[in-house]
Length: 511
Image (cartoon, rainbow, N blue to C red; front, side):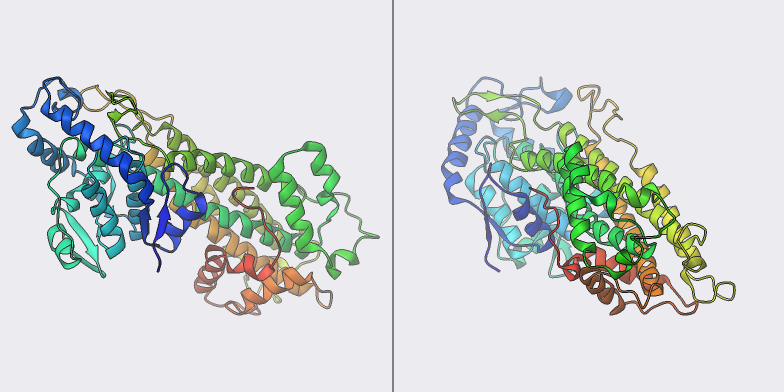
């Protein structure tokens, strides 16, 4: 695969999604090399000088007032990395680790970190040759950077720690050697530049965003199918209703659902003589709820794109040559974005779960059989599948509790306010997986409901989506072992094939 050239300051969400989903090899735009070299030279000069410069010739955090002798600066950086390798828990997925590394490359490529070109080249080489550091998932509070996880990355660059290569977990030095790479002896400030930053939190938040967006698109398909299954009205999708409110996400969600439902014989069959005046909110208000989630996800996406392009270590080398301590490592923006994504994911799942409940309830489903089984009583049908969605919905509600409002002082009160962005971002993976399974169950229920409306037919787009499901999950005619079916349906949401089968335009993450 041809390496993807990333330009610091201008990388797009689509490029970052390629790095994460496809694990695409990456390289920095060569145009950033001069800036990297200039900043490195400025740090080298500061290391030789008498003035105290934080992280160059001083201790760290609460120990910043301790001046370090020039002959000890290399040991200072090595000790920093080794002492900060305090991550615990399961290793993070390979694709998340690679995205984190690519984000660190982008940050260093801004030319404000003072890292030597050779150190940047080593990180590029690790990505190109598949040397992926083993990064424990827990240990960051999201301020002073994601210190522990990024230290595990930097340790491999020094020939310490552990890395995965070709599916095998190896000592860092062995992995580098097998890949034809040599470890680096860190120069002044380099260790600090590698571990200060929000790249761990941002990588997980981006992964959550990409998964949530794909699930949101699938929710538009499943919700349209549910509307047909219960013979719901399309009147609430009229364009003028949504134009009168004006929210972009709502307008786009309604348009997508109209396109999915056009041509449905089921819909046309009850335009006249239907005794129902209004559908429940989970049908009638789908554009308002999913549309609001679209808008919130886009707000988070804008924040995360900015963060992905940012220089977030400390101190930074400014264009006038000053080396200035600041606080760009504080992951508050990422924490807010992660909380926003969590809220959107929880709400998309909450309204989808109510549609599942609607379809299995014979008092509300407009003549569908109880629990969508042909022989209720002898068979329980999708009774417990609905209960499973309730469990997942409730779990996501708990997980959606904001994390950015939680702070605790660390490092002897030097770091007295933290973002908890890492915690907020990591939980998104579980939440998105829960949402995918809720939507998978909705897909199964809606397909059953539509098939019970025969000989009336649904629209062509929804028929194609139903056929895609039936290629993996047969119609439920009698009770059977359902767990594999639920996972197969969730996979159609996760891999995008459900939306692809429907074949209609969907809202894009960057409109």
